[in-house]
Length: 445
Image (cartoon, rainbow, N blue to C red):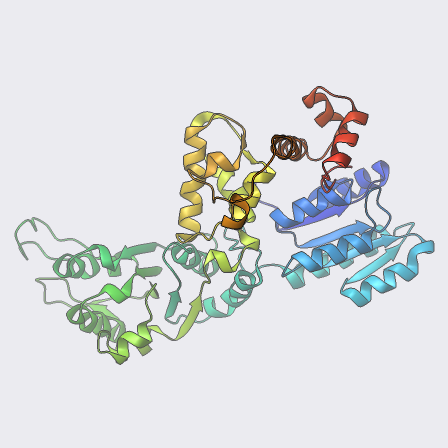
């Protein structure tokens, strides 16, 4: 079954209206997530990517205007918003348009007009790459995605830069998918820094039988294997000067000669190179050929480190947890303490480190809810000025109780009745404790 092209966030507390809209959107081939409170929607919009949002203005826990203002304050990029309103709140709907909302419709709704509006907004705001190739929800990654169709339309050389682990090969595969959505052509990746010069030459161009000891048969190189598709050369800055000359010749002539062979073999490839180094500085000091640099630097796509696009952290974590089967514990979720720890960590290893962090916690724990302690071996200690203060036993117990209640609220999606039952206390008792401990009821309602 093919994935639905657009994902809609529906925020509607009226059960009849919400169910009717959700069913109709599903029939119209939209993927619809329906939320009955603003706080549930806030959490989802911070984690998942939506092509459009349909929201009622009058919600049980927060009005649509406050919801929109909160999102604008915390999110770099928002999907287009369409608000539904009764006649009594048209003034508020107009204010929302001034704040940046895209449209509003009055109740009773004209479903056809709503669908036409949503379809138009989805087409306008849809990411360049469909399917599972989405790169992120931060403005930086969405900007890169918006460039992919134009880059893919021209068979030219692309250079991807960024720190180690930011997802350069992921971007290269997304670009290949843009070229070939059906994946009928090959995508071949080679790490130039992982092979010696002699092995790299044979890997790139292939060899003929008897070319060197152990060459018992003819073998195609990656240039031939990628013919008609994409060749991804990672860490090209590690390539020796001799190999740089041979690579430049192959790119210019669009043909290669196998090691030990004499016959030129024509190849047609889309070349994507990547590096974590500053090639321009390497050119200036003579470590990288200037002519090769300009050959591969036709289009430059730079991926910022994960610490500079924090909006992507929880979004990536959710996707990675869905694909993590370690520990055989089924689906995993993050407690609020874990989410805060992920957002506060600097991620020097970027997406690769995040992936390994989540995999490790899934292996070491059978719990379905992952805490900060499970994610990190050693959590950052308190600042020195705080650690020097003497904390009373009562203050320590209050802090522990506060953290435990916050974690239980997060685990139960903020539902007071379920949280109180899990804690073995009454709803009234829970509300009193939350007031006493100054716990903001952000997720609950």
